[in-house]
Length: 264
Ligand SMILES: Cc1cc2nc3c(=O)[nH]c(=O)nc-3n(C[C@H](O)[C@H](O)[C@H](O)COP(=O)(O)OP(=O)(O)OC[C@H]3O[C@@H](n4cnc5c(N)ncnc54)[C@H](O)[C@@H]3O)c2cc1C
Image (cartoon, rainbow, N blue to C red; front, side, top):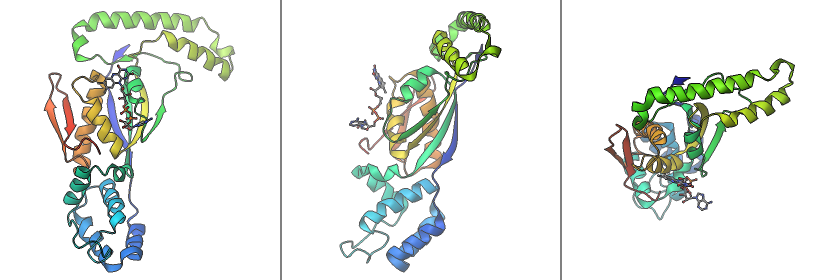
């Protein structure tokens, strides 16, 4: 067995096709809408935020004064625009852009909690029906670190018993289907804390919600550790969408993040 640290990789995110967006804005609002894009683009920090703003502004045709006779002034800056939609709770525009994360060396404790979040997500998880473990990786939450030696001995015993049981099967003589059945059966004796991997795609409305729930002081240590990392990353990469998030420091050096606008 080996001790591991949960790892977070942002492996994908929504991008905007600028040429098509330009054509669309020209068709929709001529020079006024194109002007908006050329003033907005130089300050835009991410495609996710740009797409969110385009999606929002299309609702009232608020790319400039004159496109909608009911609109006599518009919010000029992206900061003001996104802040206003957050404060009004217009959450659906934050569903257009998403991020894809790979979580490695996370436990089944973590993945079981993660998959409880159903809205706005896509999930692909390592299958222990197909993947036969070679060794056990385990993350120790801070409150168990004084027991590291004892815990290592326990997990090594499980690992040894697993390997003895595994060795009692004639794997070479089995077809893939038979291997799958035995692999799936054997995983039942492995600990919940065993490291695994999962790909998680979520839109920004969902990411805001999950950060807030899973970095609460009462949340489980591992998922708080992971979503603290995500919150820090989101604040850096998408400063407007996460502008209203602030944090308090917790004793285990993670941060508990809360948005000012909860219902988004
Ligand atoms: C600190 C903590 C402790 C917990 N303890 C327990 C526990 O002891 N036992 C337990 O079983 N679970 C527990 N949970 C899990 C919790 O109950 C939720 O299942 C989980 O956090 C998913 O959140 P969500 O319901 O907001 O779902 P999400 O899928 O994240 O949904 C986001 C939002 O969309 C809306 N929504 C989603 N689905 C529906 C729907 N079907 N109908 C109507 N509206 C919907 C809701 O407004 C919801 O808040 C805990 C969670 C936390 C953070």
